[in-house]
Amino acid sequence: MARSTRSCDRNHAAGDINPDYQNTFVFVNDYSAVKEEQAEYQLRDRDGSLSSLFLRAESVTGKCYVVTFAPSHNLTLADLPPSDIVPIINTWTDLYTAHLSPLSPLAKAALATTLPPSNHHAHVTNPQVQYRYMQIFENKGAAMGCSNPHPHGQIWTTSSLPEEPAIEMEQLRKYHREQGGCHMLEDYAKLEFDQKERTVFQNSAFIAVCPWWATWPFEIMIIARQHKRALTDFTSDEKSQLAEIMSEVTRRYDNLFETQFPYSMGLHQAPLEGSDEEIECSHFHIHFYPPLLRSATVRKFLVGYEMMAEPQRDITPEQAAERLRGCGGVLYRASMGKEEQK
Image 1: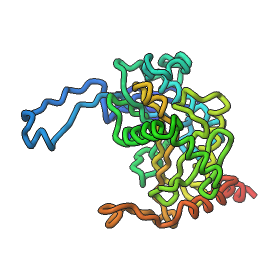
Image 2: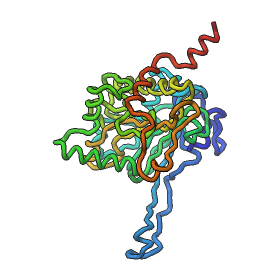
Image 3: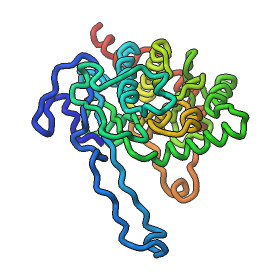
């Protein structure tokens, strides 16, 4: 959780002041969860002891960034037109490329990037070491633990591969081996494109669906329709289409219950450093996990049977997709503003 984005009052925790900026702005989180320098974890017990068998830990180093989406403190992704989301995607791409291992197959496709690539990265310097993974995410709303109202996301780079991406990676590699080199999420995108009943929005490059296995009532997954390993694989047109579909998803969320719809959103893509197989099997996608269920104030809780056994669906993904498909058009608060002006 970013305790201070320094974006509304422009002040750093260390006393520095952010400069004026026009679109995105990036800085190192004042309260980083992982740091570039971390003491090595020291095992206290010998191998073979119960403690060494059950209690395992390792040191993780990394760097945490905050990315403000726009200078205005009241404009969320749902408020921004796709053209204003493109700079956010370009910023993500810049940072991903700057941290990418030069030995990665992706480095050949990526444009040469150094930090800062432009003045909106004024408080960012090159990493000291090669990190394994970069997690780009946004927590929107107090319900998701966001403590600063200025719309922003976060980027954590770590020396290890986190659990969720590691589990996904294992399944992507398994499918690739067992299905003759096919890519799981590319095939799944084709399935959803053909069936359409769980599709919320699509364009020629991406599809947004309420996935078959969804846990959260209005969970959405944006998937690249062709095999794209990471942000560095996208053309300018594909980035514009990614901006379009992100705008469609977030606007429909807000329109559903006419509220600032809370969610946790995260990008999954190829690791910064990995084997050729890991890089090739990775497939770019975005998860949206929103908690709301029946209204702006009624949310889903994972309790009881869902904690002890398995998650249960309150509504089907087909029903959720149908409702979200009907929530397109102008953002509800923009329409309200026009009505008030009449």
